[in-house]
Length: 219
Image 1: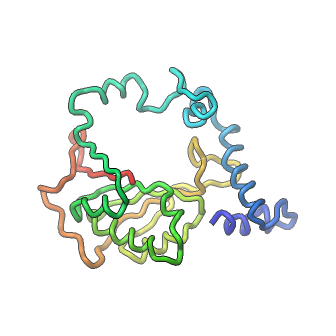
Image 2: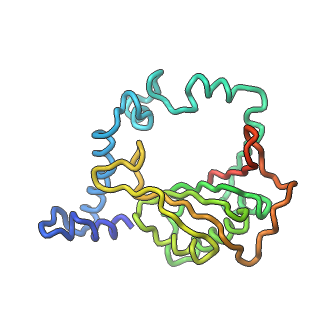
Image 3: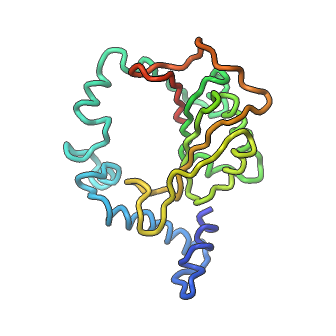
């Protein structure tokens, strides 16, 4: 996907191209588009803990993730604060199989689907499992090294609508890490056989701070 995006980019197809459509040039430009905007648009020592920890090997009182702030640390240390958290160490298909069908509201799969082989059908099988696990209107958040990942069409063919919510362009940050070319939310709009059962009040969703029930999987 990185090579295909590079081959279609202005760096290659402009009237005065600055790069060749080769793998080496594609990877080089991908890294430049990742790192240069971070340095130009964020203050690593004050507001970019993700690179600060790579450079320093530690966080600092001024530069750290939100979960390490004093207020958040106090909240997470309260008795029962993590009672709604379940950790699974297993293959993704096995974890999804243990989730009651029709109860999952959010699945965060990060960039894991970038590693599927386009020809072996694994992406389609995972999407079908996600469809069954998700409640209607449930969402899948994913990020990709591609501007238009090939597997988005697989989601749309299996009961999801897909919306791009972030796109990294040369010179601009998509976030403070800036490692991905695009970010997507795929929303379940229909069931596919075997259909997910209707969500019931006894579902395994958890309430957080009195909000609507949510059951989130970070996969």
